[in-house]
Image (cartoon, rainbow, N blue to C red; front, side, top):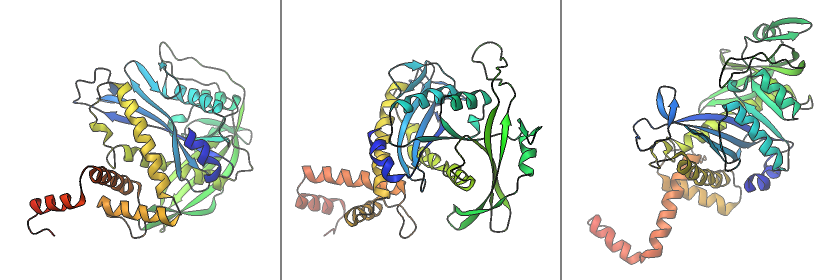
Length: 359
């Protein structure tokens, strides 16, 4: 949180983008973890994260909320309580917590299709929280005085070419964006934790609908999104579309925790609380890596180049990926510790024993 307070006004212009997402941590064979819960067809935990990124370029700043869902509930950074909540109810609690932190810029909360809930739209809007959520096209909304499916409304919205975006290493796509206003006036039907689901009445809610298509150079539609938001019209539809596109940054963070870095799915800690504590250490390491990745000072650039070289990872010329910096940092710190315990000449002598002919 301290890193967020320091870096947010430097890295962003008007808003901090708070990306909420979940990732399964599967420990199918770890029988010593007695508090695992059923995650799909496997046993493990569900990791909830709120990642703060820049509204200028989508660069990650810091995780500002973490939670681990075990059999006894959510273990979170909000407080010391273990909470028995649905994932979206935890998002609401996280928004409340972040409001109390008095960050230097307001937040826009970005959520994928898991956040498409009329009940929570009304709750968040009433609390003054700004959101940008990918919606399902089959819900009914009021548009131009008629009730229609959201996907039907989307087909009638004119799209225009927006900014170019990098889809992969050698493929550049383009966003096509259009906008209109819709009203949600039907009751909510929230999922009940226990018992039957009930209809919940609410006031009509006016929202912006941003229709986005990500097109390949040959004109093929790679992806299409229906985005609902209560962010003011001062922020254009193209900007909202780009903000949602940056949601993939949290997927890169999860990869850094898993296969591309910390191998969290192999950790041997035996409780959710112990894993959660180790996750905090890993999260701070990610913050350090991101700061090195976007640094512009000559001496820090030299350090970054050294770390990439030490990592042994193959990266595109002139680029430094977070996994490469992280791997190199581990080698670098290990080397520093080694030099604190051994003389350089002794190390060279040992190298000669290991590799005959070494000089």
